Length: 455
Image 1 (cartoon, rainbow, N blue to C red):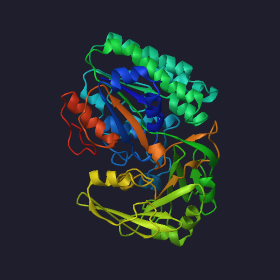
Image 2 (image 1 turned 30 degrees about the vertical axis):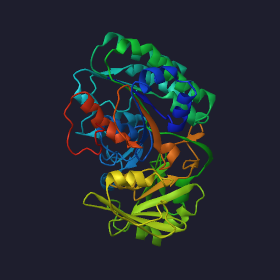
Image 3 (image 1 turned 180 degrees about the horizontal axis):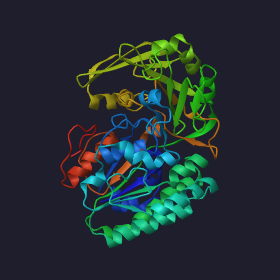
Image 4 (image 1 turned 45 degrees about the horizontal axis):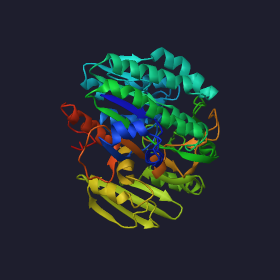
């Protein structure tokens, strides 16, 4: 099996390029004989956490990895410098991602021979291709805005693998779509050429694959960015706030941990100290929530109230989510912040995905429920409006494309397999691909997954 992860590929752009015959090899060798699926990714819709549904069959909240950056309040209360107290996978901490996964199995564990290429998730892989080249060339590509060398390495390593290996599993990440979307726009010529690079790669490797399973899939999309909100600065007006890279302030009372720049976790010290959660009611009384929902860049604010409900707030309404006995319940006051415009009483996981397609927020109830399962989840979770992000400083180079938020352009992704899957589903979750792969490869599917096999 070969799994090409098209980091940052949008569903609509991929589909349009297919229809316009700009991806002839993908159409000929994968889509026509196989299956093209519209997928909804996880929240946050960002590199790293959004790999976990594909590689583990679990949401990032289930695995307690709720974002690219996070803070563990319990460990932070004991020592702010403890190894697992605070994390940013955008720097040195990227080497700790596999460690943070803990005892969870990955797809790599199910194959005697497995390899990863340029993936931040490699736990269980027997071979890590081009490991030294990633350490050297990824920073160069990032700061000099040229991902051609990285793509050449991908081309070389993937072709070499399929030519010399007749069995096993390769997971290869193609980062240039995401990188150029951040640098310029999801619709920039360099971004679109990165999709075409994937097509050329497919054309060259297909002759060597024979009976192999070939999968192309994206972890998230991106939206063009026009304005940046200094979210950390706003919180700092209320409480001394740490955020990356300024995490060494004395006596911090708050922390801001942004992911993909479209979502952020906010953590607050309360009168009980750092260890315990700060509830929605407390932050509302302090005026913090009112200040946040008034910001033009913020789409919604979510947190937990003292009843254990997830509260979703906007300037003109609040929604309340609960999950009992495998059923979702949702009510609201004022204008419905999530756009269902109806009370939901005891709806299943599958049904709620279809209902969400009529709203601006794909799979919102499931995705908010899963992220608040994480003990490392913030006291508040912020999702940005399209056209905005939540980081005004320390983003070098400046971003012109954003992901991480719970909005359609960032949540909807293409998934293509070179085998027919007889499913009538209008949309599937990316977390469903893991058990589907195991089924196709005659592997035993673990229990207690968030995903369900499509066959």
